[in-house]
Length: 351
Image (cartoon, rainbow, N blue to C red; front, side, top):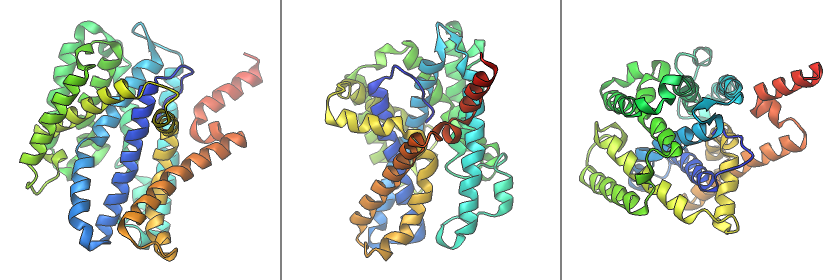
């Protein structure tokens, strides 16, 4: 997740860290499940997959909307850095989308999804997972930075439109919805908008632990009632949004209530991961896929040990890479290329 501020929101950093761990865990479980490994744990993996994918990306986009508003707007007006951040997202999407696409082409026999050079060339049309997040983020930044979407008087109408579009997304066939990520774009629209509203203080009534608990209870009841459905919760029209909102709000309230003390170990650990959520997000898939091949060669065969080792490696290595890049003074060139070029230009012109 893209987030660059001197003054940080500790609760949001921790929630970002938690959401990032869910993304990594979701991809690990999905990888083992699709590869047919650990057949005796297939039921457990399927249940875990359904639960994580029911809310983890809506939560991520809700946080993204919150951070977008906090980092790039003041009194309803965009800060100068916003236009550079939009360009930065585009560069990151192509940079890592092409890199990971080529990795999957070269290591096709070890991966679950076949990717061709044509797929890599057409990532602007059909992004390679998981980089559709950056793809959507760019368009959300464009849309929600306009004066119409920033005007408080139009908040209710915009919210209603976003919700309706999110509901309609469930009826778009996946084959069609994959183009320009239109299905994901419509579905996550309401969550990005909601994050903006939370940060602007227009939804203070939702910043209550009791509201969060109520939302979680409704979500859990729905998940239990729909547990025997063949499709994942995220594909059940109407219920998918209620479940995602219920759990996301609960986690938002939990983290703002209990993860706001910088001295606490849990806060330091999660906020640290949150600060490197972008690096983890764009790099982790290389390791979650590679670990399925490497760990057995290291005589790590147990289900739980494989999951834990994969989680640790897939989270820690991208952070280590980011720290090494900072040490070598190449971090901005890789992860903030537009900002780097802007600063370099300013230095050369003396501005």
